[in-house]
Image (tube, rainbow, N blue to C red; front, top):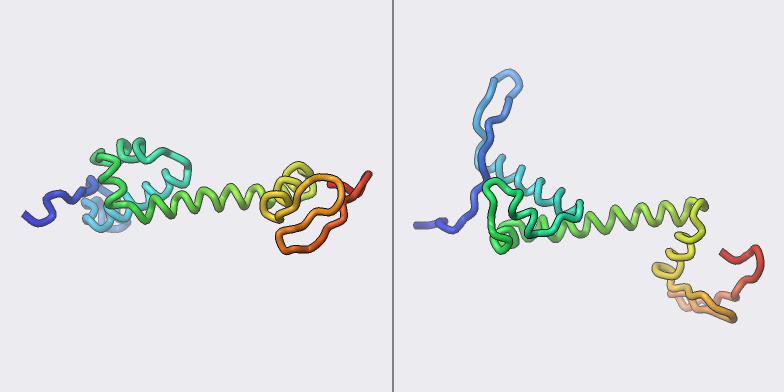
Length: 133
């Protein structure tokens, strides 16, 4: 039997404006499941927990088989959101510690006396007193 090992999402009853209620198509249910996996992964939920939350529940290996793209994209979205918040804090001027962190990790700067090299090979003279971040 073809497709015997294919996971299928539960199909829900949905409200259609002007038409009443109907059952989701398999494509609509799968699109909703993909969005759910993407959102949960972006929120930092572990794969084994996402697999249990799906309707019907599945094995984590099945989750990875059918939702590989969403799992990878969710992790990228998660990191992008955190990086955007860190950048906003670093450039706001309200959080000097975050500015220093951003310059060290993303700008290639390092703390210490004497000269430091930025990631681009530019020589930066160390600053003293109030000029220092």
